[in-house]
Length: 548
Image (tube, rainbow, N blue to C red):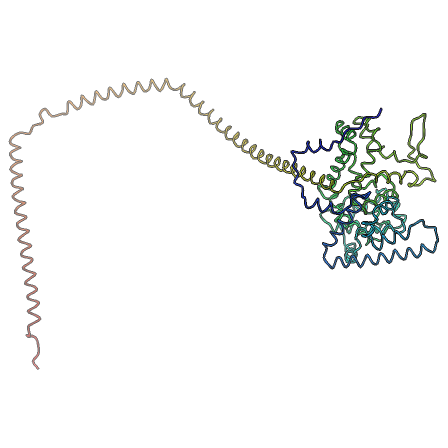
């Protein structure tokens, strides 16, 4: 029994997120809104091209001239391929007229024939010139950057051993070896690890680079890899924090919530997070699961519509398996999401019907090819029915940024609290140490008090004995003083008279002495005057002078 359709939950979602109050950059949203026409069947196609054009205009003149010059060389290569293919008649089922228009004036086609271009891309860019279209759309070929690559690949990298180890483990390595491009792939990955040391190297880069190296030479592959990393945002997938991956997972959750709220709520109730099963989808663009032919078709979409177009494939896979997923609980649900989600697109020829139950034959026959094993066209067609709005994606990204900043602030607060807690713990240990020392001192004091209480009675007895001894000594002293004190303290009258007489005589002698001193001083003054007169008389006398 199918579940009834639920009403539009958009208003509910808005109400639930009122408390978040994301600070949306209105100008940025308006700019993105102006990059596409809502009457077209694929918003991302126009939007990505016009965003790349804006970024291209922001480059310096020298870089723009180098890219434009390189683009002209690519166009000449396309014309050469077209001329060669023309000699084979109708062997190549290619609309050469339309693709020539795409090559010569992609801007006009994407803005005026967007729906036709979208259908041609969904059908698959012809493999004969797929690499040319990718480079023209991405504006990646740059002769200056190619020259720089030729220098970089001669240098050594600390990641060389890891790159060589992972190359042989990659599922597409046999495809690369088949065209003798394993050394070129190694050089490209090594050069990028030197070009962007902050990212360096991670295993997922090989999955990203293989489809590129299979469709162009190594220097062009390096240029397109750099463009995808910088202009398409793939770099954020491989940075240490992998913020770009978390943004894609959040956008995927929001799109799934919008397209299939019942399935979204079921996954939430079962405790299934998208990071448990979808991370590899976005890190490798499904290259870890699908064969190279399917990945190349996915790359046609990514290069022309941007990295966000991978969300269409992810949401489509969930919707196609909705009924199966709703019937499963946690363990089996997670197993299905990881291993069986892609079975819905296995070709009927490889599905065995065993009494009404379908069984998937995962071993391909000798005549089978990856393109026939999976219903490739159906997968791409179904996925492209999901028309993602770039403005909505930008809002989702801003919502994630707001949540990310809040969580980061919480983490910073927690780190600060942990640091403060560590300091408090250290302080507590110090206080505990001080308390232990005080406690030991307290024990010593208590022990001394106990000892004093024990010795106190003896001290009291000794004190009493000493008091008695003091009292006895005081009595003895008083007795001695009483015995040595004279019987009468009054002097005899005769002695008193003699003392008075002596005092009178002393007074008289003092007066005489004073008079004599006065006389002596007077005589000294007179002597001094006489000396002065004698000296003066001597100066005026001529007694010893000779008469002339």
